[in-house]
Length: 125
Image 1 (cartoon, rainbow, N blue to C red):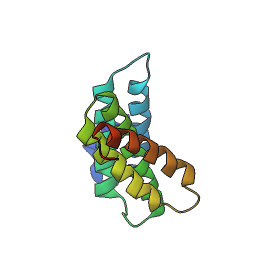
Image 2: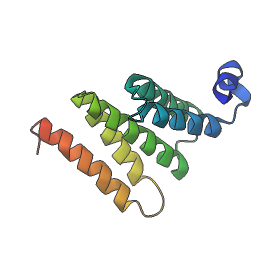
Image 3: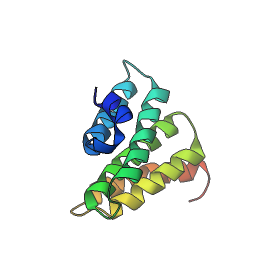
Image 4: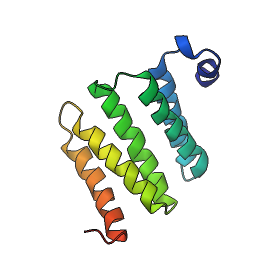
């Protein structure tokens, strides 16, 4: 598998493929039929770490990938009732979404909605 290749030979891997695989695996683990939240979260965290360490942080595509990964992990942390960590991940998702090229208003609104719900739980409105 691509993840095994990545772990064996990190220097020549196409990291974008690995990132997409991790995101897809995370979504699969997240599915209600599977419901392996901890494994899903682990995939998203590894995805974030690879994006941050291997991709150009100045690119809009990198910001887009990070925004997706942080938002997905934020939703899982919200599901696990980890309020502080979910807020942190939603804030990072929002920050990254604002750095993306193109129309991001729907994405930003979705992130802000989830972030607002978490702030309300912390009584920070």
